Length: 120
Image (spheres, rainbow, N blue to C red):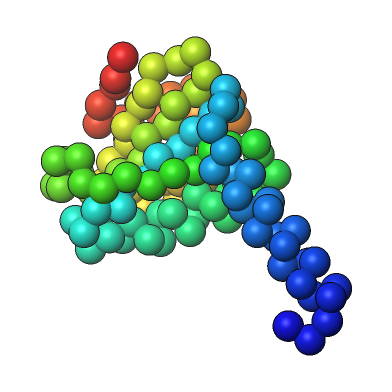
């Protein structure tokens, strides 16, 4: 840090990132970040999720979880919209992330060809 302005800019950036993790009644995306997920590319998926949310300026909570036992389907993300069932998507690429956020998170339409589980 070379100036107070740089510190304030950093604080604002971190606060914006932390806001995405706040709990509440907003949409939530959970990224599987167990060792199996990381080995399958989950870090790139997480980066793609955060970039797409940032690009669209969406109010979405992003969290991480460990292994949930579907290692062969990694990388995984869950999407939970307020008042809707949680949907798990698997075998994802970065391009799939954009499709899921556009179709499911923004428009409320489940991307059926990528779904591997539906939860209550």
